[in-house]
Image 1 (tube, rainbow, N blue to C red):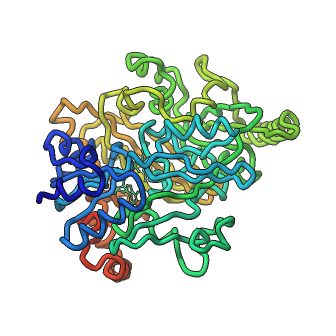
Image 2: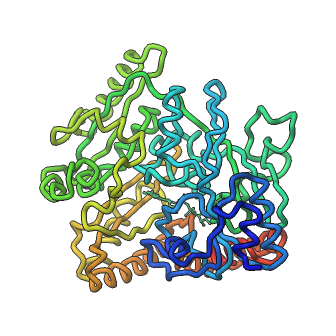
Length: 473
Ligand SMILES: Cc1cc2nc3c(=O)[nH]c(=O)nc-3n(C[C@H](O)[C@H](O)[C@H](O)COP(=O)(O)OP(=O)(O)OC[C@H]3O[C@@H](n4cnc5c(N)ncnc54)[C@H](O)[C@@H]3O)c2cc1C
């Protein structure tokens, strides 16, 4: 019996494959992670099948790498040591929607493109990160802790509770999902640490089959403001003041290239559009819900004008002909086949981390210095800054756009990726999702922490079958 036969006996003959053409699509992505290898892919349709596959793999000491969708940009889902790929894309149901409790129960394979319109029917949304890929899993976005566009403290963690299949094949329900009596409540950690243990773990500690996530009511009315800046040095004070007064919902900062890439109707327009935009734009959306929406927006707008007047800034309701219509777009995944980051040069690599907002000019100077040392044009760097928890902390993302066909440029960007990551780490940046080569850089600096993680790993997955070769395992 081959592994394929055994998996077909669990999932059905149409739902297991060892065809190299099928496997090939799981073995590499657009990141610098080297191509992987795998013996077989299985497509389970529910928790029981996932458990059976894990028990089978555990008996044979076969690695298992979960994939919820195939939109892996950072190499986390590339199987480093062979084994079975567990493709959860058939487990894509919206299981429950609870508008009163503002939560939604999703299977791991449910994608942004599928979940967003489904929840809109109930007047709800899962707060999205910046224009996620439409085929990407909502649960993995939350599990990998992608920052949301609304910097309210309550959205810094989207995942409430989950069912996790452990390496033993047992299904653990985290937080208040574990007890019948507590099912109606939603605490990530109930009697012992629960959901948080599995966050950012890249499938190395357990496999999430379903999760309950926070949802937000869709606003009844919105008013979007664009606040232009020529110097990044002037941005932090404005954002701090806005967030201190708890104004608005979505709030983010984009440099001219990223804003142009999002606004352009065709790739050919990006450069021209970019040249006409301010160097930096703070996008702030004021929103009103079903009770007195206009009044809420009006008093927040008054506060916004008070802040910007004092700082000598001029917010506008549009930029180069684009206005409030951007808001519904920001509440959806990117709609086209070609992802927005692929529009400008066809490819990209990016460095992202957390630190405080006041350090933004210093990080920009460091990134510009690294790129210019390599001969990369500063104008080709896309910058996205996302305040989190009312700007208590800032998510930084520097995107180095590149032509994937241009081997020399790709090599240059690879070196920039390594140098800029090291430089940011030396400046105190926190890499909360250590993908690929970041793992070495992060865990080498924190040997005691890596030791504790290894103890947890040994306890939960003694044979290291779950996504081996990732993090410090
Ligand atoms: C800070 C940050 C910024 C990002 N920015 C963007 C962006 O701009 N656009 C965008 O589209 N994406 C972005 N991503 C998402 C990123 O590409 C992740 O790799 C994404 O989660 C992959 O989605 P996927 O559904 O294809 O996951 P997969 O490739 O299926 O898996 C991603 C990782 O999670 C593990 N995993 C998958 N499913 C499960 C499961 N059910 N249980 C346990 N582990 C599982 C995998 O083994 C793998 O390690 C960002 C991520 C982070 C952390």
